[in-house]
Length: 411
Figure 1 (cartoon, rainbow, N blue to C red):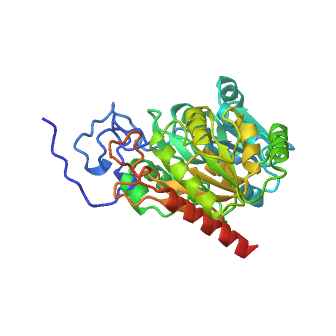
Figure 2 (cartoon, rainbow, N blue to C red; figure 1 turned 90 degrees about the horizontal axis):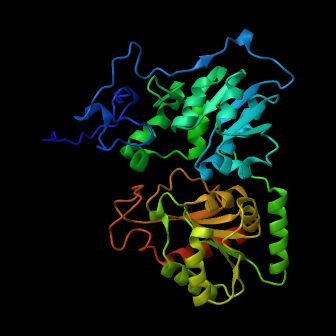
Figure 3 (cartoon, one colour; figure 1 turned 30 degrees about the horizontal axis):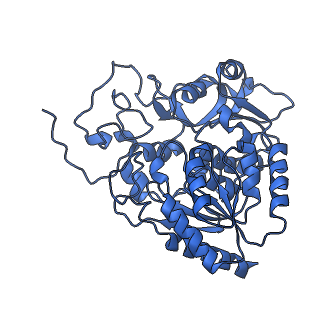
């Protein structure tokens, strides 16, 4: 018989985390979903002589730090998700303000390289693989910043010699702990739903600035178009040359992990109908990827006057597509982050995920469900209708109109 679990109305603290529990992952609450300090399912791993929260790290004495013409050497580890990679670029300005001579190495997933490859503030961009691990483990850095809790990048963070380490660190068992006290809050966000869903008021850029121990100044995302992105934008500009503005991008995708973020077909049809009636001068661009091919085809079949930008754009070309838009309507997705980075007006739709960590930089509006169970971060939902299905096209249309009016007033 499983023990009875009593909900304790206290906030989880770092010292409550059972780092030595076999169920602890650090990425999210364990399968029992309890606050660590009061969990009756605690099952310790093998005894370990050190503090169970102690990070594994390779430290370099300041006098031994490799000194070259590269100046202050920084390595950033941020591999995914791609939207998170993009918003981690908000750290580049504070690093360079503090260390104008900084030489920045960034390790990311191969799929995210198009988001960073044209950034002039990243001096070396490396894909996360065995070659990169071997290379960096034989170098020395002044500062290591790790924002990943997945096994491979976490292990890499423990292998790279650095004078100062900040962010997430591996424990003796390869699970996440932190290098510095300022990163404790970020770790707690992963293991406490109460903190993440209901208490936290900090945006992601604010959280990572805190982890890295740099002053937070609300720096924007950094995204630079590659030659392929520039070419796609020019191509689309030719198509749109004789069309009226504003150009409203409708991004129907939501990524592959949390399909509960998907806004359904009928709601997109409602939105288009509302906007075409109230903004007859607007031009509408349909955005999406391979997963949205069927939905977008149905939207095109049931509406008129929509410019299809295609579902087969590379990531670099897709950035060029977003560049041609004036305003983008999207669920919580990579497209939303790209639009924010390109300083577009954004209407962002939130149901199963939290809107709090997203900063639109005063260039948009969040449409947030009023379901009591939201946010939930569930990958599947059995409610009918669910929170995204219940979000009406008219509600979103009114948000688009407000955003455009506000922008016109501020022009």
